[in-house]
Image (tube, rainbow, N blue to C red; front, side, top):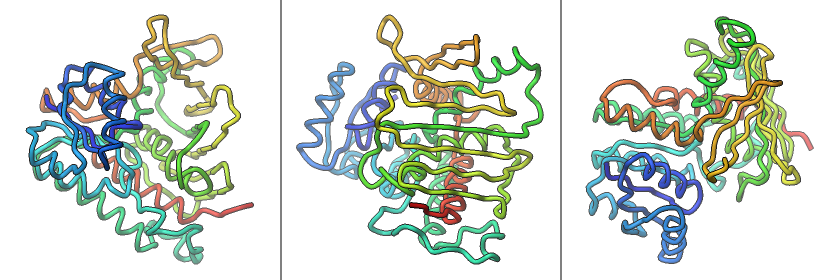
Length: 341
């Protein structure tokens, strides 16, 4: 299958690497200028034998190339137009998180406070955020009409099989879920995503994808949302379906090894991505003396996405419907947030 990457310098180069390693031909990528394309091409050639073409306009790339898949790794305010164009060109779409979000030039923070009545309703109130959710629905609806696969790279769901094996070895079958916990630290977040609401916007998709996967029939209790936003950390607590959820998203540039934890029913595992003896990155889950090692979570996510396309059945770890729920939850929580400090 022929794959193109929109935005190949950052996380996009890793998307390209995993698609290549999973047997796809990375045919092209789109950047924003000749200089960024030159940098991206050098990065790709450092990861594998990239022989594709570069474009400074993704629309020209979509017109010129015969593509099966477009992987979108540009800023989130670009995702809607790019996903629509890729789907209209007949490609399946794999999209980096967050699915869609307004630029910081279009939406200023902190958001206006909601009234008591508005906080109690399961409705996104800010008009720009309502438009964002509508755009997400539009993309997924278009993918369904065109019978194309849409997948969101909120890859922590790919760890659920390993987590469940650890949980059941220690406690027995994982049935009822009463609590969900997710902690994610980052050494650094670029640009305007580097503080306050930006930290939640950039990182919350990972936490929310796990909540949705563990509680597929759940809905948010909007009155339960407590979201404390500080310069370097956002802590959100809420009820979703049967569970009480706590997510802690934190920038910690001094951390030698950023902490990443998640789990249900107080069975919390430590997650780490590290290279093995051959230099291949692996996902490592640890709980007490238990350790489970699997392939990299992005690789697993890309592989599942490709399997769905090749077999014509199944679903990505985070499919279009879950991606819409994810961004709607993110909007509902952030507009109920309270800035401190």
